[in-house]
Image (cartoon, rainbow, N blue to C red; front, side, top):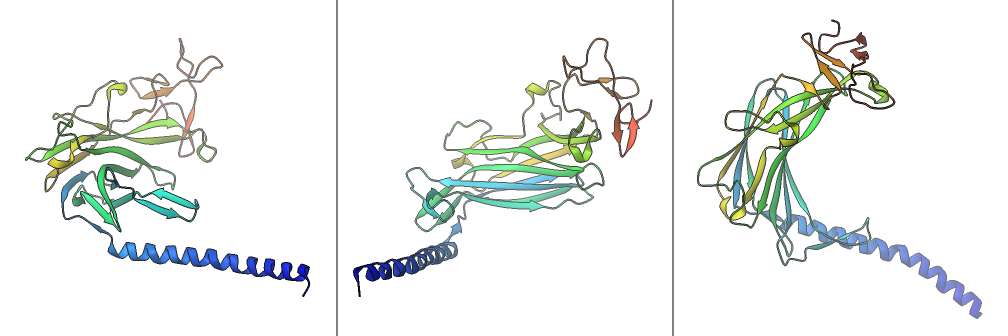
Length: 285
């Protein structure tokens, strides 16, 4: 066999074997991941999240776990072709019902997989609801949550008694610029933290989401409650775009100089379910 033919043969074998090597590596990684998934577990240490949600609202809590300090916790990512830091998320979903619901969920404080120990760092709240019958007539709100820290003096630290958070959710309306809903009213779900008397600041810039920061060493076996109420009072999604009258809200016409209401204001029309309207929510004056 000539040197040239021998070289071509070696090259052919190499390119035939190369995919097999990659496949074996990928299969090996899958087998390793499967074994790790079987041996992974959450800790028995936990806190209890009790959430009360309004009728026709769905609720999701998302617990996020990150590697403990000093832990490497790397895992191979086939998509990225290299190692990445492990992250873990545990979601609990509550579907909407036509009555108010109170649900209880155990949130583990740790997650372990293979040689990686992870700890709870964040629990996020998500609320979703519909304001109409159309498929696009709904919105999802990132409605706050808990940040779990190692600091003993963390703000809103959970004590021996149940810690309660309060939130008021309402719809904010605006005129859609999306092609599918052009010039129609659409709504944004907004939830704000309320005080013990169920009040929220009038100034939007001073509002915040329900939740806060809690110390990890104070959480085990404790109860954290979050109660959401729904307010039927609707407001515009942005300041100085609508003017309130005795009959309702009238939208201002944008100009080349400003998107805000001018002096004197010039009003525009909009649509509600295909109807031409001049005032919200009654449509006609």
